[in-house]
Amino acid sequence: MDDAQRVLLFSALIEAAGPETCWLTPGGGVRLGETLAAAAARELAEETGHLLAAHQLGPVVATCSGQWTAGEQVFLATDSFFFVRVSAAPTVDTSRQETLERSLLTGFRWWTLAELDAATDLVFPVGLGGLVRQLLATGTPARPVLLPWNWADG
Image (tube, rainbow, N blue to C red; front, side, top):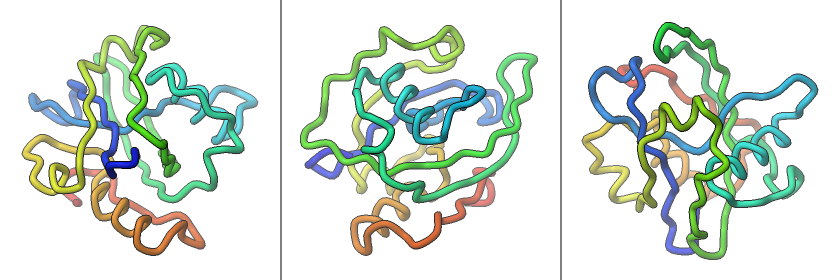
């Protein structure tokens, strides 16, 4: 989230979302031996070019779990979300994205909370706008918030 309270999301065409474009937070997989925070910092750098050390991310603020597909591959994901504030909307550099990321991600944009509320495209994680409002109002929760996985559950 930047100083204007906008959230960076990537557009993607993912089979689980149907024929529609969906919007996702930056992120990805955890490599063997990597902590969640180290993986999040690495993925943030790969997908956005924004460099942060793992300790700068703070605690996990939300989680969700479910299944998604890309081509013939089925992925079972447990997603953990960090709330990262930046002083200004940094330039987004996608040049370090891996092959799978390049094949799925089709663009990016900074969203206001009002735009998230009015979105007609699917936004993942489900409940992102409400989560961000909660974080802004009350700060980091004592335990991560459990978000629904399926867009139909949101």
